[in-house]
Structures are given as structure tokens and as C-alpha cells.
Image (tube, rainbow, N blue to C red):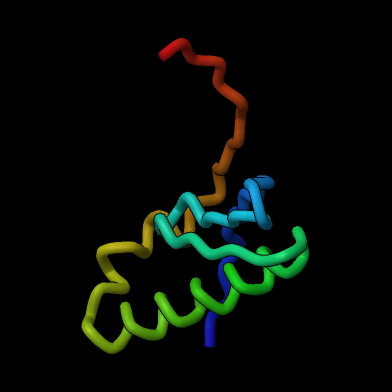
Length: 78
């Protein structure tokens, strides 16, 4: 079983915390930062399990294996 280093972004919303893995577009939530992170980990593991089962690992391999990952804040006007 291969391990991957992915990104977890967590932010507070009314009623809890939202977590997202931007590499895969998988999201989850929890009542605390750690809870949201752990729920995201489980959701990502299920996503990858399903991706293996349906033969999509080659399609997402680049996002899983990239050594260059950057996060930044953006200020936008809407």
C-alpha cells in the first residue's frame, strides 16, 4: 500500500469546521479542527479505494505524486 502526502485545508464555518483536499476535490467536516481533518482523511481514503476499484488511479496519479505543492491566500473582490 502506497502513502501519499496530500494537503488538508480547514476553515471554520457556522456550526463547525470544513476540510478539503484540493488535490482531489474531496471535502468533509467536523466539530473541531482535528475532527474535520480526521474525517477528511477517511473521506480521501474511501475516494482512493473507489478510484482503484474503478481504474481511475492513472488519471489522478499526477496530483497524488507531485513534489511541488504551494498554498496561498488570495484577496478577491466580488
